[in-house]
Length: 68
Image (tube, rainbow, N blue to C red; front, side, top):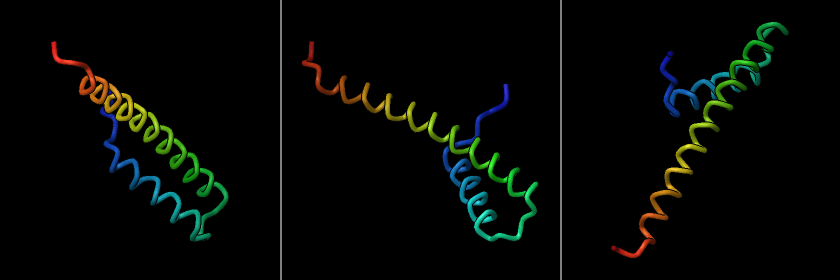
């Protein structure tokens, strides 16, 4: 199983894709490829952020439990 990129790497991929698309110097095929790559990075980043949020919720719930 391939190691999933960390969140910082995913943000970097997204930023690079956006910059390339905004630059306007890509062929249609290149633009579509960059868009697809960026979209995959966005989806992966969202999954990671959702996992982080769930873990934070767990930690907050543990914090509010009475000792015992």
